[in-house]
Length: 431
Image (cartoon, rainbow, N blue to C red):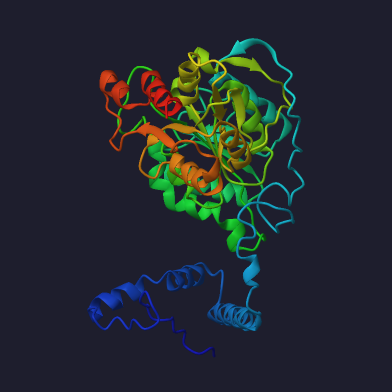
């Protein structure tokens, strides 16, 4: 006869917690809910296992855990020099997750655009890019809240709606990525992603935590920023700086349709979790409208775009505020260099430093709030690496540290606008 089965008693949060502070009746009731005991009872009641077979299974599991423990304690301490390895993909083949283990990762295309008229809206260009990549890559899935019936083109199996649960959307994405698929979830608004922050943080460190044995690539599309006709604290957030501090994530924050196609396609053919920010005020408006650049157009992450050249002041921006900077710079021909950063992780330090060395003065403009905004990181880098090249203090223009108001007039009064940018330009040029 097999010895009577005894389950492990419920344990506290730590090994030293004997739970003496808890009521014995409560502990006894909790023990009856032990999932292992429940599984044993279920399998025995169905006749799937005998008590002897269960005991053999339990002993085999114990032996496996013991053997794994023995192997683990024999490992040598890791090389401290490898602490920064595998934050992002830098070569090597993971055992599981992502598209490389299943040999399904498309190669990157060309940086040369092959535009076809007419000019189309940013949102339509994003859809066309997704459609071409789905035709190329059968492992690509698009899902989220209201993306299927309203916008799907590949059917319910690959474009589908989800429940109103951002935690579920991101958690599902992680499982799909582990399984060798490429999930492309959409979160309806930037603020809506906050409930899923724990899953997002875990997503970004998978490759690092497993020493490149496991990978999970995903491209999360999020509309961000103020709306054309309204704002509010929930739908009008950009909040990119928070994700710039979330390790293991690449971030694209584009200002036009051409860059949207090139950066999105690069992300879809890449190995790393990526945030793809699409500004709400650019989705269906003329400033971002451009021709479709072709089905093979890819732009590298970490390469800023020089939009206007000048030799007295460098303006750095990204997203919708790029267009405000361009409008403000028109009154200063030949004097202003306007850089569109395009991606925040990684970001183009070399181009910024080159421009600052040439102009000696810098203005950083962004829609996120001032305190701890990403502009502060750029400003700090310039102060350290280009201090002797500066002819004036680095200036920032951002949204004050308040929520975005619903009223259009109030909203316009706090966002960086053309008049405020010109004021900063005049101040710096006269310094």
